Length: 203
Image (cartoon, rainbow, N blue to C red; front, side):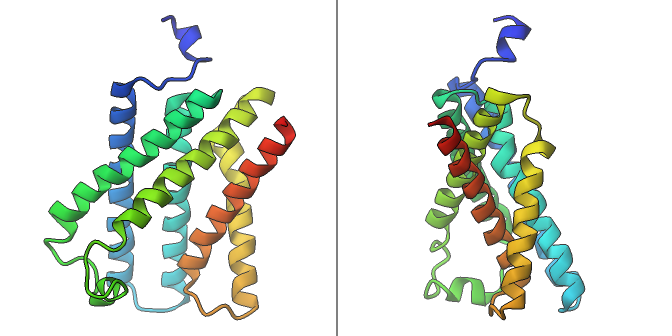
């Protein structure tokens, strides 16, 4: 396949999905380690929440849009390839989590207490969330490519703005949820909204 053909064709071969997904898993692991350092080294307060939120947003953009970028999502196959990359990324992170983070007791007890003391409660949620974000990123990327060239900044920018607006609104109305959680939820909602809008435009 020529370079020009590869630039305009979905890449969903098995090896490429595994290699790309492994990169996503490593990116996720680094982001989680950075977030843990932020919560351990900085005192509780607005500064820590803001830095943590920036880490969450950066990780959200990377794990949701890099799969589509590497799959060169243009059509249905490319969108599915992006979702597959996202899924494999969550599996790779699971290995990092079990081998490294769990052994050094990186998470506080309250994290496990949410699931009744189980260390496995969040993994299915993580698999679904990682796959969902990559799927939405694939949809938005494919739709953007249909009209113009798609870049991470061009796609991620509106989703980031939406995340900040939603997180700010949540705080203004007194939502009893930590700012980093609101920011992550806001990004997910914003990216999903962009994906739905792209589908409506295409219909």
